[in-house]
Image (cartoon, rainbow, N blue to C red):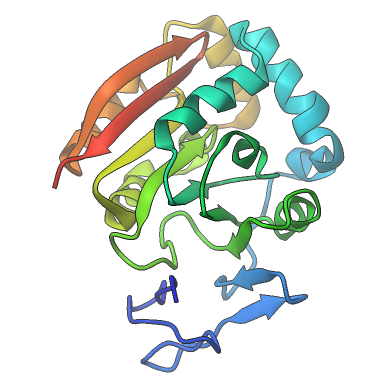
Length: 232
């Protein structure tokens, strides 16, 4: 099994029960559920799920950065390719269209997003879990990504620490965040989404503090894509 308990870190068996007795569920035989309570998902995002990857995200990215959604995801996918790849905050799982992975794991807190992903991409392992406590064993992932998600968290350091833990040594990590403090669009988006706009140096420092060596940073309008490698 690839899973570990998000509560105590012990191994989880095929019945989704950990060594210390915590039990988890499989929803409709297709979604591994490691959340013991519901996490409120943005209502607007919930409403646009049917058109998120076909209209919402492509138009939003094109308008704000001048880049197509496909080229944005393809570049990240090419960087993190590997046998086992994890996408944190996967949404509809569109990034897996641009990944060559034998074991592909999409993690999100939204059951509706994951249900949609399984209809479109049935080979992707759907996991309902919190980015701050990933229910995956340490050192198993060749690549891990989180696109357009970390800036929505109150404390991204926990999620980055978890991404580091799950990565193998020399594994690759890519994050895309709202982090261009000089961008008027970034300021507007941060107010709209009611999130704190942090400078990209904040994320770079967090990555480096977790032994993730930054090898590339790309500015896409209000967005910053930061690629790194686990060095220990």
